[in-house]
Length: 322
Image (cartoon, rainbow, N blue to C red; front, side):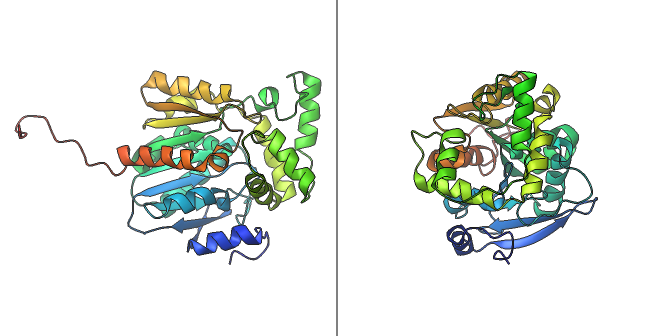
């Protein structure tokens, strides 16, 4: 039932229902229960999407609508978000990597392309760091969108006054860690457009969509998760662990996780030989919402090359010369 609390905006919920999701649940070792939604043909090549902070599976609606006809699209609610429960462990970088491992074990039977936005990208990096054997078995490619390895408290520009000093970091933590509900209205929408998205290219509809998704996040969970992410430090080894072809996307107008963070990840993965490419979109933090067609095309090309492309012919001894 996608209509019980926390309620998604009726237009978003209706759009998701039209895509005919199959809903399942994954139980983690510490007692969290994660909601998983699958769209598209059950036997199609699989794409797995991990959403970011204060969002939920429905955040991927532009990708569900654009890709579920060709692929099996699997989205899940991060713990404490959407319909997923929190469990006994506090939310941090290690926990969300373990949660992705639980989802991949329970809901994904064949190798997939794994896509993560913001905190979802952190989930993928943590998954590779702590579950490398499963990650090698369960994935053939990755897309890391608007994400980071850490240093959020000192490097984020979502609060314009943040200069990385102890004082501004303390003020930022106090504001982002406040368990306050997000009001609905034009003021909120305009703040999101200005601080989170690219105001020069974002439509009212796109800004409203992001606002409505974020409004459904439990305020306490949103605050606790923000404080945990502020102290995140996965280390370069998380990016070094990624061992599949990887696309990194950044937003040139991203104030939440500035594009320098994504470029750092791309540089590390390039050194290991697994960087497919770095794509700089003219968006803010929500590139998949602000530029959905471009984002979907990036996913599609990554999948066509590494997920559904026929294997290259064996060129070893005995192979045909034709």
